[in-house]
Image 1 (cartoon, rainbow, N blue to C red):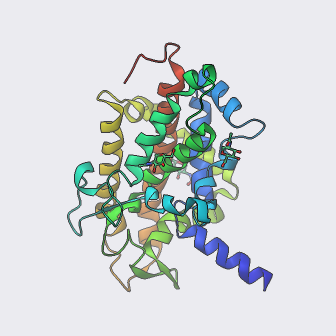
Image 2: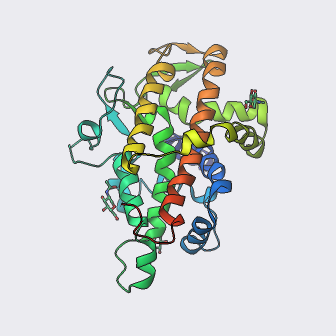
Length: 285
Ligand SMILES: *[C@@H]1O[C@H](CO)[C@@H](O)[C@H](O)[C@H]1NC(C)=O
Ligand SMILES: *[C@@H]1O[C@H](CO)[C@@H](O)[C@H](O)[C@H]1NC(C)=O
Ligand SMILES: CC(=O)N[C@H]1CO[C@H](CO)[C@@H](O)[C@@H]1O
C-alpha cells in the first residue's frame, strides 16, 4: 500500500515537467556559471540549502491548495499543428487569463527578483523572493523541455499514447523523464557522470546560448519558439498515437534532450547574473 502511494505520487510528479533529475541537472549545469553576486544572493535566499536540491520545488507544491493556481505556469499551449509560438496569442491559461504561462511566469519572477537589493533596504517586503527564485529556476528548465511548448489538443504530448520499449507511456512523460532515466541507466550510471558529459558540450556554445541582445523578455520568447520547433521536428515526428518507440527514436533524440538541458542551465545562470550581477540595480529595464 505504501509503495503504491509512492509510485502514484512519483507518476503524478513525472507527468508535470522535466522530472526531478531533469530539473536537478538544469540547476547543476547552471551553478559553475553563476557570478559571485548571484552566489551571494542565492546564499541569502536559500540559507543552508543549495539550488539543485530545490529545483523541483515548484512541482512539489503545485498540487497543494495554496499553489494550485500555479499549474498553468509550467507550460504553453500553442495552436495545433502550427509549430509556432506568439506571446500575445498563446501566453494565457485555459480560461484566457493573460500572462499565465511559463514565459509570463519567468518574466514575472525575474521582475520580482530585480527588487532584491531594494527589498533589503526597505522594511516593506512585497514579494517572497525565495519563492520567486525557486519558481524562476524551475520554469527556465520547463521552457526548455520541448513538449512544454506544444499543441493544445494533446496537452503537450500528454495525450499521445505510445509504446516505449514495449511499455505503454505518453509522449510527454517520455521527454520529461524516460530519456534521462534510460541514458543514466545505460551510459552514465550516476547523475554526476551525466552532468560532466553534458557540460563538456557547453564551452564551445556558451556565448551563443547565453547571449541576449534584445530585451530579456524577447529572449525568453525565443527559447519558447525553439521548444515548439523542437517538438515538431523531433518529439512529435515519428511518434504518432500507438507507435512503438525504440532505439532509433531514443538514440536520435537523446542529444536533443541533453542540449535542451544544457541550454536551460546556461540560460538560468545568465538570467540570474543579469538580475543579481550588476552592482547598480537600475542599469537594465
Ligand atoms: C506573479 O507572481 C505573483 C506572486 O508574487 C502571482 O500572484 C501572479 O499570479 C504571478 N503571475 C504570473 C504570470 O506568474
Ligand atoms: C517564503 O517562502 C518559503 C517557501 O514557500 C517559505 O518557507 C518562507 O517561510 C517564506 N518566507 C516568508 C518571509 O514568508
Ligand atoms: C556515454 C555518452 O553518452 N557519452 C557522450 C558524451 O557526450 C558526447 C558529446 O559531447 C557524446 O558524443 C558521447 O556519446
